[in-house]
Length: 372
Image (cartoon, rainbow, N blue to C red; front, side, top):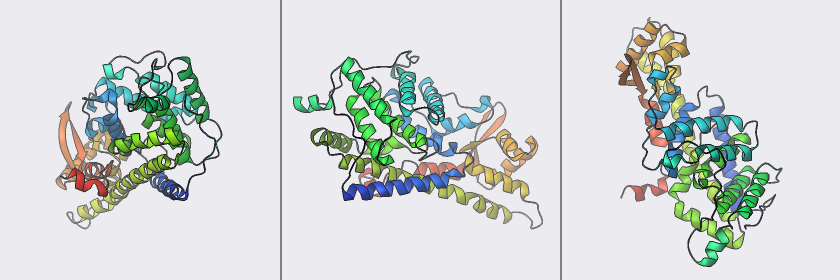
């Protein structure tokens, strides 16, 4: 069984530098999103990226618009999501709420149970989905022995030791803790769905530690894009017990994805002024603009909107909300995409563009590869 995790870590200078930069970018993202009244504009695209990475969702397509429709006030306007997707959104919504008050390990185990069986489209299991035999990572017998644990009681004992470590006082930074916790979770592989729980663990730690407020960082993007390196670094730590390169991997991932989310936040923050300036160029100078100003202050908070949502958020009548949305459509701020129950659903074009462009985007160093 793998060695117990340490309670402190002494990284080398390069790791300290990368870790410090990750801490800095996480802090900037926290500050940039602290004042957002509706962080779901970041949560839903993040959840889509995580869903796309999960084994339980292979072959199940889901779009940003479908997930964004969850936040519409009228249930009749919401897209019908596949069972697995709807289950994930519900479970993660509860988990990110509960972890503010409960230990990370307890919430993680609950998520493991609630998401178990999704790959088969079945209802969640009542018990924890413990793995009864070790999953070997391949390579030589020595490598397999080092990176897997015996089945049965020893496996559960190792997992419970890890869960106790997660919620114990530790003399290490947030980045160090998350990197080590993810390493041991991946190494032990205690559940049948452990592979789908790495991003859940990191997300719960982010929120429990107060580093971020919601599920707004797509953790799986960095791991998926660098899967081969992830496995190589894991084997390196197994053999050497040197965590430096592993911690740097997670630090780089945090810094990378925080940078992209900060671009989204900055882009959205510029939209109200851009919209109101364009609006004023199209109307008479003495025309009242207070209603439209309230509308454009709301639009950057959502990917999709309806007249009911605008009326609720801006304290408009339904008629006034429809009129303003028609004007916004004329100015190409929103685009009518469908009608459900005689209600028009609009996409906020610039919000969707910013999310598509930046959330989970490919690093510049990888563009020459993806464009070939």
